[in-house]
Length: 191
Image (cartoon, rainbow, N blue to C red; front, top):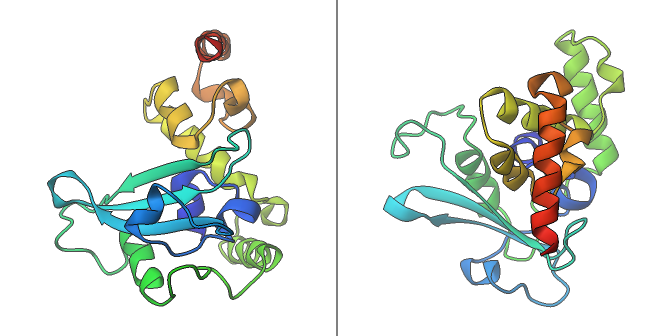
């Protein structure tokens, strides 16, 4: 749940926790009453790809299709404790039926308590103050720090505009330059 939320910049409570296993066909059209479809497919070149189809998202009532490809160096030889979201989620998907929730053992509050307890064991300062927003904020900041362009970061988080300022740490971008870029992108969307 934590890795998936981080990699896809998901809102944990209403997007990640209720995720359901899906089929490749459901990427294009979800059955009525379904929240989502999560499936592993083969992308170009046979590289495994995790796809999430959400019925709706904040500011996107028509929903979203999010994709992440395998990040293993050699996707044919997966490391046992890989942080590759594709290979970490694939075994979980195999354990549930199509249409069933992937994360059904705990509530969002229980998962948050587990996160905070784990951070405390690792002696992370102020662990009790972490919220679900930390995944989106850290991933946006990491993308910006690694040199990703504004459009790349916006696409990764499925953001449309300067909403990213609520997540990425200000010191990773020159703030005024970022605001100018975000404003110009917002203007383009309205056309």
